[in-house]
Image (cartoon, rainbow, N blue to C red):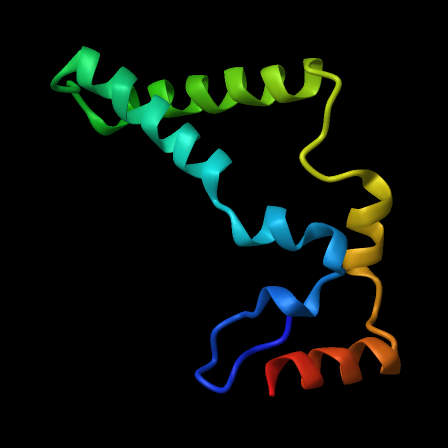
Length: 99
């Protein structure tokens, strides 16, 4: 990703098809809420390993749910396009948008 003048990553460096997904952090917030909800049920953890097991379990369950759902947050084609080196035209578009 490109960096803004302040050094922050900008979502305009990725293809327009994924701007909405890159801009939003709703899936991450939902995952954090689920971890918080489950840890509130436990209350106090006896040690660090117990907390890591709970978080690992929630992450594994979420991964299985995302893998089995059949829909993707971003398609493989869009991810490949995002990871490809930017073309000179895209760099010019980003510069114009950022200005």
